Image (cartoon, rainbow, N blue to C red; front, side, top):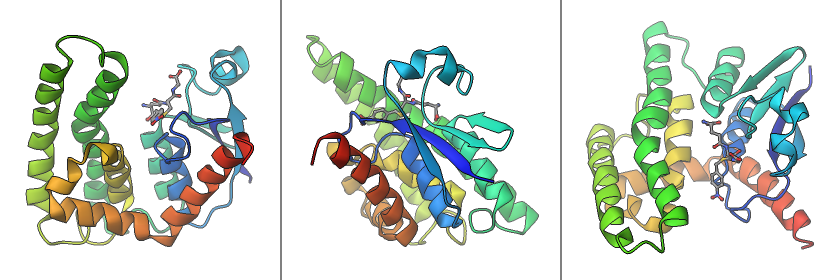
Length: 216
Ligand code: GTB
């Protein structure tokens, strides 16, 4: 059955792979599943046709036969459940990998998301620098704990899993801030994720969309 995901027809990140379709593309590449992409604009994603896929009018979504999903975490989890390569066979290891998906989204991405929002919406406020300090402190607190957990391991819990895919996707959103580089083991962890052939294929695919949409 054909898998179709949705993505921005022109990503505001200019092909940096920061939009959340990237984590779905990466997961599909890891498990070797081909997929089609249905592109939406900021206008069409709020129209009824797309809201039938995604109640909040966002990307990414996932369609396969009569199944339609939204939420990048749920989609990556679904891909991991259906195909080998992203979730361990051992029941406990599998539950721990799923726990890391939630930790990435609920514990680590939240302060990172707040920072992204502040850099877009609050940059001109007189208290912006002070606010950024607070947000960065919150992020460092999470990264410090994550760094201590990872230690000198390659991945968060044994072999590479969907938990690592999600955590690395989340940490990549901090790239331009330089904060991850303060934790050499996390910087190396992110680089290991980026070096995976599946990541590279996913990144190239989303970049090609941006390049084509820019007439390049
Ligand atoms: N919780 C949902 C999920 O994980 O799937 C959140 C989905 C979401 O935020 N989607 C964003 C969206 O559709 C795109 S990824 N936004 C349009 C809207 O809400 O109207 C977020 C994103 C967008 C842009 C950048 N960037 O330019 O760097 C990075 C991340």
